[in-house]
Image 1 (tube, rainbow, N blue to C red):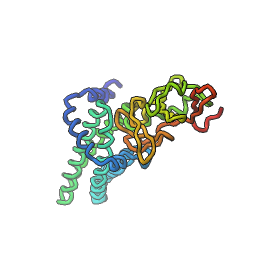
Image 2 (image 1 turned 180 degrees about the horizontal axis):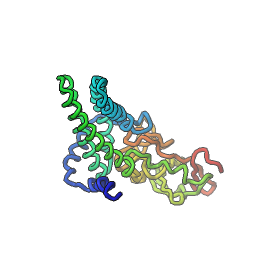
Image 3 (image 1 turned 180 degrees about the vertical axis):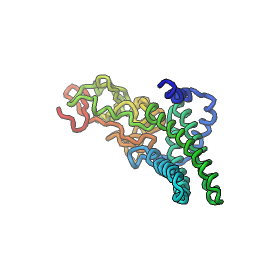
Image 4 (image 1 turned 60 degrees about the vertical axis):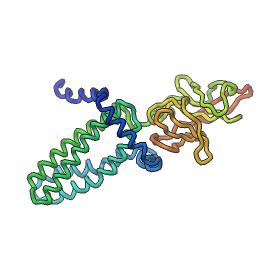
Length: 292
């Protein structure tokens, strides 16, 4: 059993592979030149969840199907069609993954570089396989395709590490509705808040961020839904006449009045709280729809 899991135990070591950092810096700089609207679309902001995991289903699915069909003598022509379809779908999937990768932590980026390299190698093998098939060299085409399948499988393992162990792309505020008690909760005095300045408050162990606008106070969950950035250290800005809060880590922009995502990389909305003041100027908050 120990020998079976040993290869996978080496994957976390990639997180500290600092020799990849020059490549990472160049890649991040390149992604930052892409227009914000394009990045938002590739992140999956309009869909409300990351786009990359959806797009990768096509190349992975078609290449897996091709690997099976290559075992059947009468289906090899169909294998070539599936490989070509996967190659066409690989570009948008890679573009979405690239913009997501550029807005992650250093450890995630290092794993992501190797993940991307594995997939680039896979694309190279599959491209060579398709060319060989078109030239009538079917055995060579099948061999190259299986090498590509091995490379994309390694990429898939690394993608799983990114998504499930390193929580890249996960909603880091999902637990808020489940751990905040129902009803109204006193989180402090409005007099302690400065107009237009984000302030950290706490509801028990749950961090909040509050922004005062005169007698109105907007309150959101204090940790960014993208990768748990401290929103109280962010900047208040305006988008289309709406007050917004910018995460200090990866520049996600949330609308203050309801926590909706204005710009990614975040795709999940920031949990927003209803607010009211009691007669003594104490700020009370509750989750929308909570009783009490």
